[in-house]
Length: 176
Image 1: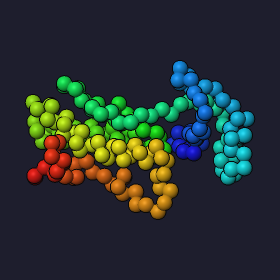
Image 2: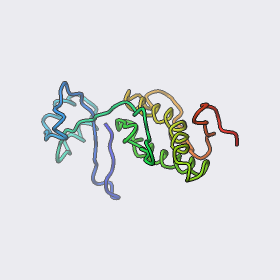
Image 3: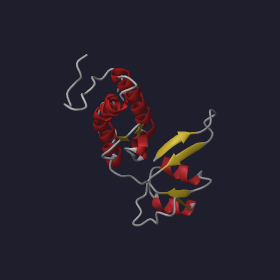
Image 4: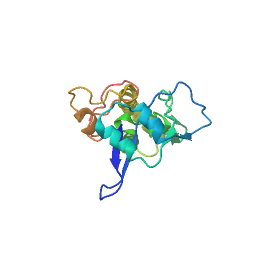
């Protein structure tokens, strides 16, 4: 269960939780639900969870869909980034962060090869983003983030401008 304050006064909370569904009609992006359904699902859980359910004004259900990263991130003069090429579940709250990292890496790649070499820049971008984005996507899917005593610096401390660039063809660091 992920909770967020939505006002500066911290008097309103938005929360999201996941409940597996045996089936889902993909034509339904969201469905109405009820506080009663939430009470049943979270019966016996921690009092804080019970308080969230009791304070709920509206309950809706929506699908969490995902797919494997695309095998191709660019074509011609167009490149994809973020959820368009590597969508992930919200369990790590990293979807937007990955899109920002993608955009920063695209900038870095264009600076490396020049704006006139878009195909080379796109290949360099994918070579330098696919492994990291796939790792975050996999861990988010497995919902194992910070369930052990792991150092979150691999995620939060990542600096797209300081990691060595990997050559798009050789998969080895580019000489500085």
